[in-house]
Image (cartoon, rainbow over all chains, first blue to last red; front, side, top):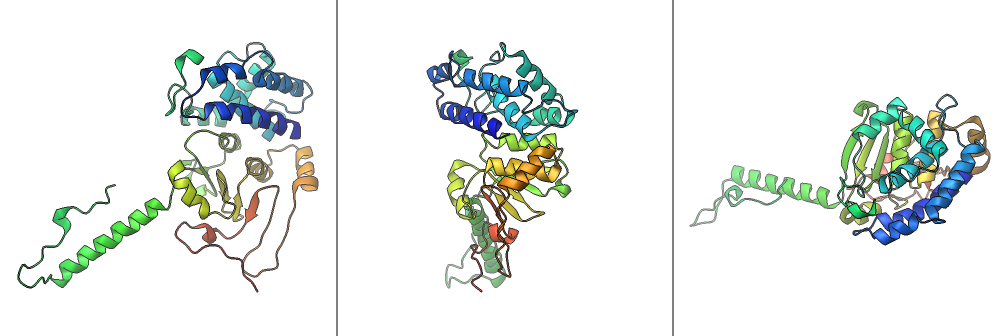
Length: 129
Length: 188
């Protein structure tokens, strides 16, 4: 689980420096998603951890804190770039499994929109998606 | 809510001797005191609350900024474990004042009323909820007990200081009230 905290922490530091600003810099967002950038590194590491079963996105095995952390990180990335998981089908599937847990699905349906989405108080520029 | 006193609510004074009937004066000052109390409460940074789940079963109170931020993982874990919690948001303007009322002075912060715990770190929040809800796997629980659980009991009669992981502080709930007295450890 410490590995998950570490990789999510690195990603969050980079992402929050970009998205939680008054005016989101589209160039900085593009740098995040650039080949070899922070996001790609995170996705590869998460994929590797998923293969090692460091965290299991399987409700039968019992969801863990690691599942929540990675799901949250992927959720932020999906809001910034909806197709960012196109090359990582395992992560995509894992996210789907967690979001289909009834209690999580109920929360996701009624939560506030993120402030850096097109519906939030600080909308993301449309040309960055 | 408007905190301005409308001209109509000010009692009319007698033009000759400036006397005001006692009942009118009392009601006016009562109203003034109410308004001042409301203003001081608002300026102290009392956050707005949203309750997820049954309000009566709420033992957790999460205070965070209105944006999703790092507290979203905690909200997701609450949802995953089907735990009711009170989600309170606080604006940046009020945050500075509100932080002074906290022992750790960090936001977001989680209060657990069942154990009188104030948690100021996301990692500690997640581990605290997971331990209580058994969402962690057995290995994680063992790891947590062996490595990250540092418990320090202070032999003071009125409070117990308990550090569970980084950024957790246990103390009576009364001590963090916004308008209450500042928290001071007993010197005895």
